[in-house]
Length: 197
Image (cartoon, rainbow, N blue to C red):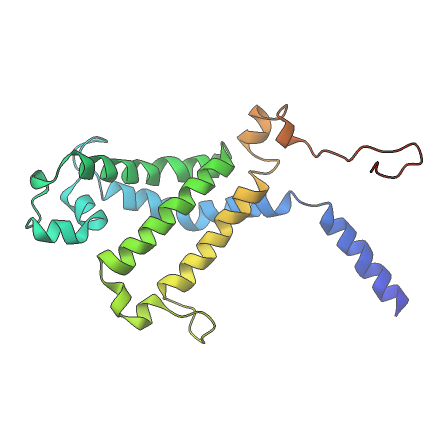
């Protein structure tokens, strides 16, 4: 039994030293699962260029307001246009930065904000809050298509990147290698080899 425990402890120590795995796999999974999802969604929001949001963009981001104005986006003001443009550009820029690993923590944090707004829009703007099966409930037996279940997992993936950064295979490591946060800081050692108080 002590041999099994010893093997387990050695494996655990090895995994403790492999902190590069989590951010690398998280960025790979983000690219594999979400990059095209967000880019295609962003493309649906553009009409004639990067400064021309489509009517669908306004309807996706401000569904109730668009309904009130009869889906005539010319009746909306500059605020609505700026919000739609910022949301659209975020769908292109933030995922790209995460995938290449540049400003990863900031980009993942921005995606968390985007995800919160997206979820609230889906729940309240598009009326999903009234459909219990669409919203979902935690600790139930159906984790498949419910918004809250899915978005919790998306949030966890992004939190890994906020906490761990881009990992060793990232542009953060190339450009920020001399930054204090890029290096693990060891506690000062006393003469006896133990951490100083």
